Length: 155
Image 1 (cartoon, helix red, strand yellow):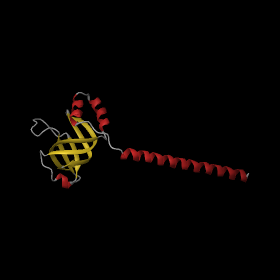
Image 2 (tube, one colour):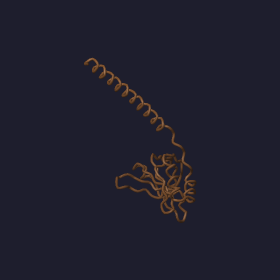
Image 3 (cartoon, helix red, strand yellow):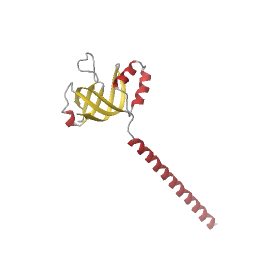
Image 4 (cartoon, helix red, strand yellow):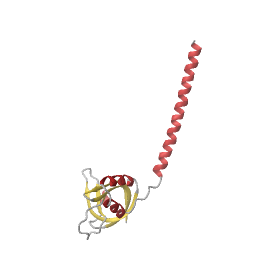
């Protein structure tokens, strides 16, 4: 009886070890796959004008679905500095208007954080070129509002 019990315990332990090894192997494959996806180049976003035009022709529900498809896409845009604000947390947020400063009724369309040294060098109505990743897109009072992360401002 003790021999049978010892054999059963050995078989159970062997099965458990095999299961753990298979699980670790699957986790390593999943991690490698995720790592590959993260290091891949983000898909390019459409021009801002295209996003705004699509918003103008969509219902709120349609735009929300479209906005979700934009998340994670990379922008290469230019616009004019509307303002730079220091947030409550001590970071700096740039507001960019995608319309020229002489546009009559225009508000900021794009926002993103920048380091203090960059924020303090920007001037109102300065035209800037920037790249970044779309975090969110919203329709706010019939105005397209895009929030970016990982932004680089080109000289």
